[in-house]
Image (cartoon, rainbow, N blue to C red):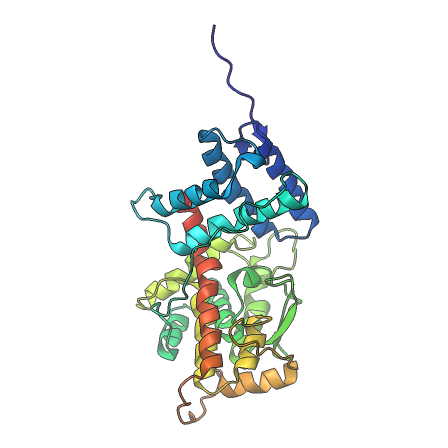
Length: 366
């Protein structure tokens, strides 16, 4: 008699899991995450990481939340440490951290929802992810070379120049750039509205006059030619009239970095880091950079104060090197203080979890 295959529990499209209590709890956890206004990107990350954990647990005969103890979680952590991707490379500590955070959140929710009496993940020692300053920081000359690698005699070249100028001038994240609409950019005031950035917070940031000039040229001469069918108002469109995906915008930026001959790994986050670094080097106060970046606080400094856009614009104009007209450069600023070093450390740590390499890391681990 042929054995029947066990019934699968579906926790979402493409997320088949064995029929166990952990899988059912995962489905409820994801529903709760959506109801709690957790961002879709975070929910997807929770799906991927917890699916991998539940499959790992099922292979070891563990199907109930109550069967998972601290030693079991530590064993899973060692599994991640020894895991090798198809190319033989290990997971970075940043990747291991990213895999364990959803597990920790899941067990915290299980206690709150009365599935288990205590949280075995509460005492789990997470991998220590140290911000690395060994990464390449674009110089002003590097940025200019990348910007000039665009062919602005073509429609797509103007669009790409506008994208790169926006990234460098405003220091917004890749995901924030993708969701910009034509109504979020005010080229007359020189400002850009980020709607529901990280932490679901809105913020208004300066956009330099050179970036405004390219965005205005794109809006007048290029975007009307790209719009196809229904126009949802997304600012930057592909040649097919569609919004960019996070992967495609990263590949576009990487292509120009390679074309300029700049030996740097990464893409969009390089411009975010470069903007902050260059403004700090020109004497900008860390409070203003922090407001631009959308960091509500820096754990090592606690220096955040609210600043008005007018003052932020003055600082941006005075310290950002991208201008329509060249002005004599001021004397070099003093060495960065502790607050500036803390801000750059926060940027480096953000790159570990956030931008261009995150999706490549996921694809390699799947």
